[in-house]
Image (cartoon, rainbow, N blue to C red; front, side):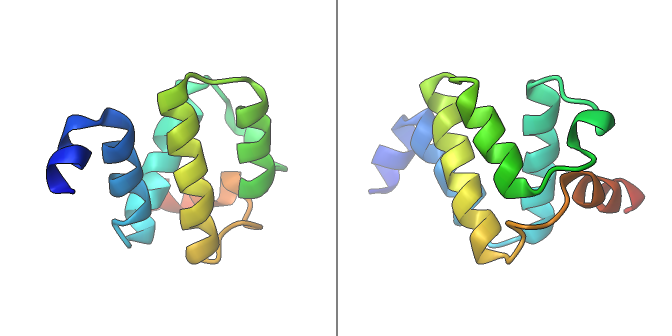
Length: 96
């Protein structure tokens, strides 16, 4: 199994996002995704994580990004962050 994960960028993304177990790492990944899609603070100020992920998935990202978003949905649920405000999470990360 470890070789399969190492050989697959998509599985590596899933492993790093979903199985890391660190909410701060999750928030850093969230910032990367928001930046990747070119979203501004204004774009995210009234969105929950679940709404953001639905919006991004609706943009038909490539398979790797779709896998990452899907794994982040699971991680958000596991960390109890699904209904958290995206802008608030990103601002909390910036203060550290």
